[in-house]
Image 1: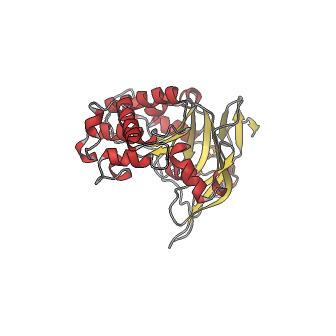
Image 2: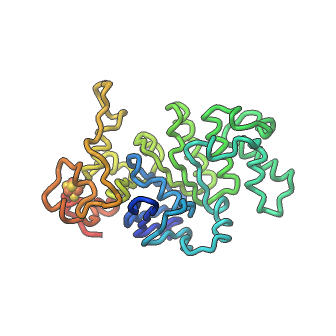
Amino acid sequence: MNPPVLDISGLSIRFSGRTDPVLALREVGLSVQAGEIVGIVGESGSGKSTLALAVMRLLATGASVTAGSVRFEGKDILALPEADMRKLRGAGMAMVFQDPMTALNPVLPIGTQMMDVLFRDPALSRADKRARAVAALKRVGLPDAEQQLGRYLFQFSGGMRQRIAIAMALLQRPRLLIADEITTALDVTLEAQILDLLRDLRDEIGCSILFISHNLGAIAAICDRTVVLYAGEVIEAGPTAKILGAARHPYTKALLACDPSRIEIPTRNLPVIPGEVPDLSAPPKGCIFAARCPAALSRCVTHRPVKSLVGRDHSVRCHLIEGAAE
Ligand code: SF4
């Protein structure tokens, strides 16, 4: 197998502020191969966005990497000078956020913002940049692309805004696209269109995609492999068909049981996972899910489970799983 485009190993991140430090990610590991779409799924607060921002090296002040590495095409991202990182963002890796109204600039026409993305390429004339922006908008399905360049974000619908954000992220044909909850604010029809668009663009450009979502339907529709995060830890990872069709970790099973699309009898009271995510300023000594786990054993409270392999490509962090320790 070729070396991965993205390789995260043992990544731990701590947030410090006025309160006790919070251990937002602990020993997170995952890889993304060329052309692969890898999903990250978990409840709010599981660390999905922190992970994405760490890859882009855009973490807020107060966040620090306490252990581990992030390698992009073999380069240690965490050790790169900021000037090199700036060159990498956009051309090497790009990110699309949940809300284009806050991620993009609402007081600049979209054409100006798109041409600004290309400002570092001295070989491109203004006309070239304009042509590239028009082509990108056409590619994501914006009608009358030439005329749209002078319009502002508020003049577009939610689905069109997200298409514009995707066009902007792909202007420099990055090798890795990070999509952070990009369909969360959209209805199911628009969501399906955006997922189709992402898949087509991956096939055209050949980029890899890190697809972050709490929506299991979206994960099922687009991801080759899926990583389940809970309270900052990877608790299960493997091919999407195995994670969604033959989950082994009690947390993944609980997530699936709460998925509205899998509930057979219509109800107004959607199931939830009882209990709360643990206080990450003082994570439990044993299993991170022990306080909410219906299958917990006494050793779950005292001993942290190791990551075990179930078969060749499916890993689970749970005492119930007897596999080869990874
Ligand atoms: Fe549940 Fe124990 Fe497995 Fe944790 S290690 S998920 S508490 S059974």
